[in-house]
Length: 171
Image (tube, rainbow, N blue to C red; front, side):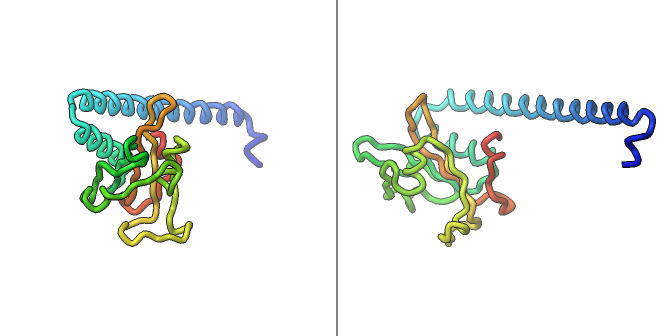
């Protein structure tokens, strides 16, 4: 390139690189500070709650809001039934789905429960478009305590009809 041979080009390049690094570093610090404030506020609200339903509703609302999901559900494991049952919903009545049960390893929710790993998917690419939802993108997150998975959060219908992606795990 014609710029490489010019005097002081390397110095200019180094200064631009340093400046961009400073901006990126500042943005990371600001993001981390916001994230810590949100975690602090969430834990304070969580500590004030007593009932299982209130706690599940707060967890669901908070996670949905962080990734911009309009609908979601929490499926918790019921030892007596040896299955997961949907115990809280956002964006639709729990009465529509409270009868459903998912064995460990069965379907998407049971699969996330068994593996303990989050999943982001698109039902359109899997060939099973979902009529009840506005979008085909979904996100499934395990709620874990140590090595044990306690529940699975399912989030769908992202605002602005965007798909979920791996960046959503860092919000």
